Length: 188
Figure: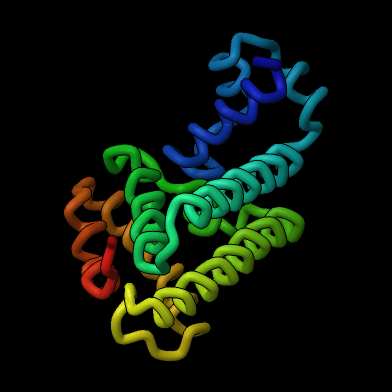
């Protein structure tokens, strides 16, 4: 693995576990086994690192969503896998997905990083709109109302469920927070 990727991986683990303000370049240098100056070569400012992290994370999620679409023909099965991405992202309630971790500490983030988060949310909502539309048509998601509102609510439920489960350190709290949504999904 190249040094830049190692730094991104280390920073992602740190942000997801401790938040954006919960690590320093010294922490990354120790974790990766390099000098701080080497980090500044790749990411002159912490903000540059945060932007690169969020961009990479968004690309990874969107790739995962394409794979879900390829694996499943029904909206319900697609939504089920989407929910599982958020649940597994808790890693036993030890961390949050990167977007949730960044969003909860957004006062420390630049406009560029916030724009990356907005792109993440916008793309997620677009995929969810397509998924709810399909689920409504194929009857694999019940009681579908306004599709755009469904998509926005689903995203909010997933991110909120992560925060609740992380703070309580109980994965069951994720399931409870998502229950109204998951009870409407038929997986074939």
